Image (cartoon, rainbow, N blue to C red):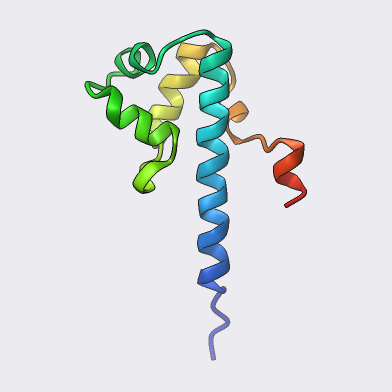
Length: 92
C-alpha cells in the first residue's frame, strides 16, 4: 500500500553525512590552527569533551544547526563547506 524507504540504507547514509560534517569541521579547525578547547569555548560550549565527541562523531554525538552557524562565523567560511564530500568519500 505504501512505498516506504529502506530505513536501513537511509540510516547508513545519515551516518556517512554526520561523519563527513565532523571530518570537515575537524580539518578546518586544524587548518586554522585552533584547539578543540578554543573552538568549544568560542561557540558557547562549556565542555571541550562534548565538542570532541561531536568532532569525532563519537557515541552518535553530532553538530546541530546552531553549532554549524557559529562555526561558520568563527572560521569565517560558508556553512556549505561543512557538507562537501572529498573525492575519497564520493567513490565509496
